[in-house]
Amino acid sequence: MYEVIQVRLREAGKISYFSTNGLRPTVGSYVIVQADRGLEYGMAISDPEIVLDAEIEEPLREVIRIAMPQDMSQIEKNNKKIKEVMTTCEEKIREHKLPMKLVQAEYSFDRSRIVFYFTAEGRVDFRELIKDLATLFKARIELRQIGVRDEARFLGGIGPCGRALCCASFLKDFEPVSIKMAKEQNLPLNPTKISGLCGRLMCCLSYEHASYKKLMKNFPKEGDKIKTKSAKGKVVGVNALMGRLMIETEDGRIVEVSWPEK
Image 1 (cartoon, rainbow, N blue to C red):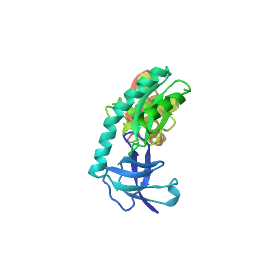
Image 2 (cartoon, rainbow, N blue to C red):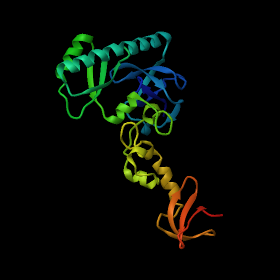
Image 3 (cartoon, helix red, strand yellow):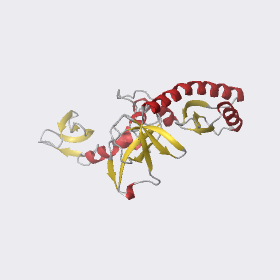
């Protein structure tokens, strides 16, 4: 068994499990962790929990230390410096006339590596760009092409619900989302109503889908003919969350009843 916490690497990176290494970071605090290519920083987003060996994806990295004042100073310097780095990269992209849009850039904690994230409609030959950037910044350069959902995760924003975007706050991984999920949740099939800021179907359709399916098992389907204490007719609407049915009676009236009717 392992004692682990969830850590979001850098400012908007991947969320992964790390061994606490006996430390007790609080939720929202920064930690220094052992990552794939050396030391990285991240934010603890969960309390410590015990998990079985089989539940952990190997290799399990460790939290090295809770970020100290000098670590936070280094993180702040990196974040300030990265704005200048992005400006330079954008100039080089224009110079090389590359069909790509720079979205974000991140320093590794020790500044030995810079990762540039970009979007593009197709594949981009950026070999000469990498050479230029490596010469300018004296660091290992990585360019990663991302999709529109990852772009939304980096940029953040407010969703239609009025809350911070799920992908930029707590969502660990992107799950497949289908129009069928919207149908089964009785949502209007209007793209502007069920799409997020990224232009794709909202992620919440996926992780709320199981709850709706469980609720809907106890309800008749639209088109079913039923008889209740209040009405008899065809079901024309179902509101599982509110526990209500809309029934069209034989004389053409629409009657709303609770379900199951008491």
